[in-house]
Amino acid sequence: MSAIRENWRVGALVILLVLSGIALFAPGMATPETRDNTTNLQYGLDLSGGARVRATPVGLTATDIGTVSDAREAEISVADNLDVETADVEIYPETRQAEVYADISPEAFRSALEAAGFQPADVRQGVTDETLARLVDTLQSKIDATGFQAATVQTVESSTSERTFVVIEAANSRPDEIRELLESRGVVRMVAYYPADGNQTRTTVLTFEELRDSQIGLPDTTQQGQHHVPITLSEEVAPSFAQDMRDYGFTTNQAYSSQCGEADLQPGNYCLLTVRDNRTVYSAVMAEGLGSQIATGEFEKDPRFIITATNASEARQLYVDMRAGSLPTRLTIQDTFFVDPSLGTEFRGRSFLTGLVAVLAVSLVVFFRYGEFKVAFPMLVTALSEVAILLGFAATVPLALNLSHIAGLIAVIGTGVDDLIIIADEVMTEEVSSDRVFRNRFRKALWIIGAAAATTIIAMSPLAVLSLGDLRGFAIVTILGVLIGVIITRPAYGDILRRLLTDQH
Image 1: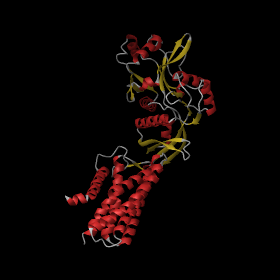
Image 2 (image 1 turned 120 degrees about the vertical axis):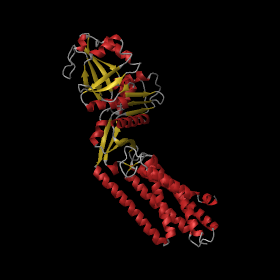
Image 3 (image 1 turned 30 degrees about the horizontal axis):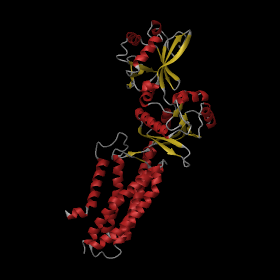
Image 4 (image 1 turned 180 degrees about the vertical axis):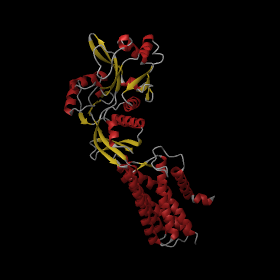
């Protein structure tokens, strides 16, 4: 028991290596996005190929605008002053902030707020952190619903921190596929088109919020091959929708005989329009069966119907928008980046070769330095153990490995061997006469290593915290490697070295 107690760090290292091996190679632990048939590692854009699109949110933020008594009334007033949709203006009474999601100048926004009775302290480009977080969450939901593989959404600040970019990465995808997702906000609503007082009228009968809060089924096709999205309205919405249909005349024979093709929106017709981002994507006549259910009141008991679409792609887009939600603002695409999958595979092979060369170079230096197999071999095994543990961690999270992470792993090998050389040099400066002498020298070496580790962590922390793209991945891997080394691998190597050097006396 005493031997186990004295060498518990070696035992902990072995346990971590076993768990890492399970995470890396055990069947069934790989995620659907895993890019390697041999291991459970997941590869990012650099090593698997795919597209990266960087965009900026459209909007302005006004701070410290003053006391807000009625946010809704203020939003309407500011929107009227700017001649934009009310949905494009947000006012937050708690934080005394206001946002507008439109291409207007800061001066125009300030003037509109002042005309509404506010005195903003500052008007800046960009949206609030809350809106940015909502934007990222919604985009991620849309990406998940669309079926992109190994896709991530994150925010990255510019070098001057004056602008925040939204970066979307998707493996095995092309930039135009991501562009389609970003080009519109995805605000879907149902509009009634009907005659009233001698004129054709358009009235929203189902808002985006009401559709989003409904039960949205998967896109499907009817027996006639018509693409559609099944929907079941909530108990709160169904009665008002049914009443609107009765009030506007959609349950009459004249409504059932209307012509509602794209070219048939003529006076006297009764059509239900599917509108996405203020553009009519489909127009349909009320089915007589649905109209009868609405007329008799049966619809409220089972408020199911279908939203039709022109094709399968349009139906899928409507499903994603209603299910995931609309973007709080539009995005302006700044640049795109594409890595061909074959090139990503080549990068992966070269990354492995680079790591192998680094290990071989370190091995030669260590063996030339000490010339003793029993000192150098455990040193290399311990250093490589850190990499194995980090890879196991990456497979468990899972973390999509990119070139920045590979660079971090190579840095971990270098810093790890540096620390192990410090330990070996410190304890072998003179002959080790006893276990007590070894412990004293080893403790001194650990103080040096701990100070160096603290310096590295402090230096890397800003890169790990700030949204600086690939630099963040490099910093996180380096910090994790340093922590694993200081807590587990360096002390474990000390226990191994103590065993080897003190047993011979």
